[in-house]
Length: 261
Ligand SMILES: [Zn+2]
Figure: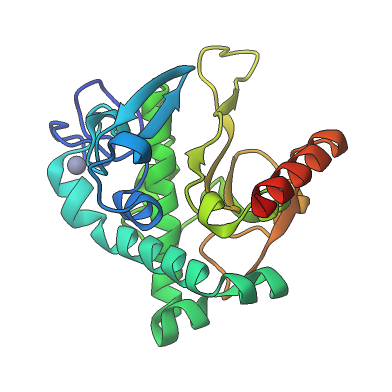
């Protein structure tokens, strides 16, 4: 098979039979925010996708998984160090939330210790895997550079990442915003000569106020943080506030009223 051109039913990483599904949301992120489940009664968790809401029974729920696009080996064994590096980052950021929000940067040596160089590369590969799974879910071929970099220690790629703070989320109490886990829309652009083969993408994912922005073959907006391609010790956080002033003020009033009641 041609690498990077996912054939339906095959693993987009190695080309073997796809018999494993990546979670749309990472199990550890859901457990951290919502507990181990089952999510029933007043703690029921709803997952809204394409405007359709479905109740989620627990962190392993099928509605939270993509259709199979990976083989078991790639999804579990091969990419396990990537998943671990991601879990370590999120745990560290949430445990050091006040510090990170005050300084507005993440120093990978503080997160990972002496092995930070390998770990930040594995973290980057976690995001590359997440991006690949999202593209396949949108019936879009994963660009070859994304597939190839997963097995390399030094690489060239068109995928640039930035991390930004959603300032509006900081208006919410911690316990509420911690449950705010999701993925943004995938925006794609195709060349005029091949309108059905997009080659440029923007996407994002978020855990609470922390938003990871994906810029593939598209210039990153510097307001969303310093550009990272698995090549720095320190990443500077960007900042954005999606609510307009009126909505923002309303939101502040609501939170105040709730705190007072
Ligand atoms: Zn595979």
